[in-house]
Image (cartoon, rainbow, N blue to C red):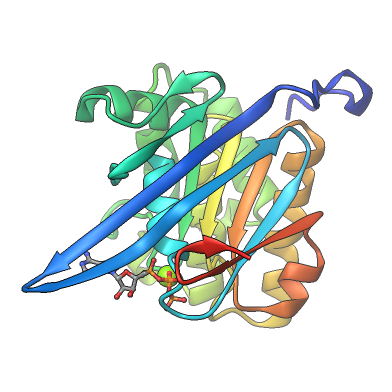
Length: 230
Ligand SMILES: Nc1ncnc2c1ncn2[C@@H]1O[C@H](COP(=O)(O)OP(=O)(O)OP(=O)(O)O)[C@@H](O)[C@H]1O
Ligand SMILES: [Mg+2]
């Protein structure tokens, strides 16, 4: 791992800037205001928890930040580059370079092995770094399952393999939606500890969670209600 000494981390330049994000969904005659003017910044070295009731807009927010969805209003900048209102290809390139995503539903391709999944994520950005792949497998404790296909992993192993994929390109921004949702306490704690190590190495981490213990481990909390920060 290429850990950056803490004192050399630039904590004044935001890794992520969300400015006045709006997102509306139309289903039939009904309009849902999923995000209503959400603004915040994330800095290097910090873990921020996003909490709020079901339907408050947390997953919508993460999708807009990752450029998987485009907000109807406002803008997202990641490491100084505009994510919103770019072409799909530009968003995908910025995402692959700078964002690691961890979703409860998993970010693994089931018929590939754990190692192949990590290698695939690296290929999207450039060359495959075998030493880093081995280091990641070791970091998440899956060296002995490296050549198992994703479909054969347990829930906790899927979560750790998903984390290794999210970290494959040393992202500056890590976005996690309920990464510890169905995991036992020991595995949850382990995932959070791995994310903390990344923050200490200079990344910023945003975690959506319903779990008060996970929120308590964050440096600050952003609470959403009806699409607004409260
Ligand atoms: N694709 C969609 N089409 C229509 N409405 C949607 C869509 N996605 C989300 N919504 C609505 O937008 C609102 C916010 O949804 P979102 O998934 O962001 O909530 P959440 O905070 O992640 O909830 P949970 O804690 O249950 O995951 C909800 O009212 C939801 O029904
Ligand atoms: Mg959600």
